Length: 205
Image 1 (cartoon, rainbow, N blue to C red):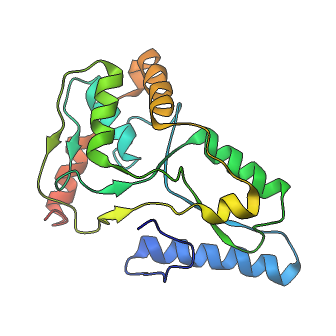
Image 2: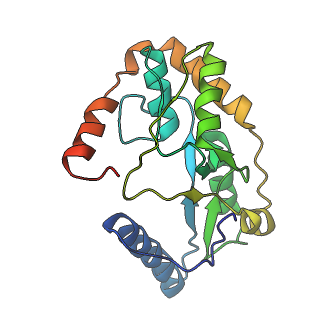
């Protein structure tokens, strides 16, 4: 099921704990001093000019870098993990609505596309748009900290802000691929090194 903002929060690692505290501080300061504040919760944001060489960036960028270097996208587990990928254009639209409208003041708000897709489908979509015949490599193993399914319920953004995502997956990833093809020097693949680091730290299962 898509995740709602009022779902109980689990803070079982330092990453989730810091995000939780940052969100609470923003909303508390806003309420205390009467400063309109919203806590956006971003899902898988992608778009042109994002880093294609950072092995800790979004998975779409990592896979695109692999494909541009003639290597298969590496898909952990069985590829059936569900995610919500949202274009940077829709993210900016939602942030502008938060600035212009008071409906979501003092609330956390999911920022996503509202579309649910498997990560394997995204890997194959990127290859198809790029015109590559390289098939994803499905590991059947995973990382200890990964969430199986994580998708956005954007009902609150729709109702309080009038947010309506405009960019489809096909449109958004086509734009990303076309931009990446014009800047091949930015796609340096460091993925194997990052995986080795995970292996060395015992974080692969």
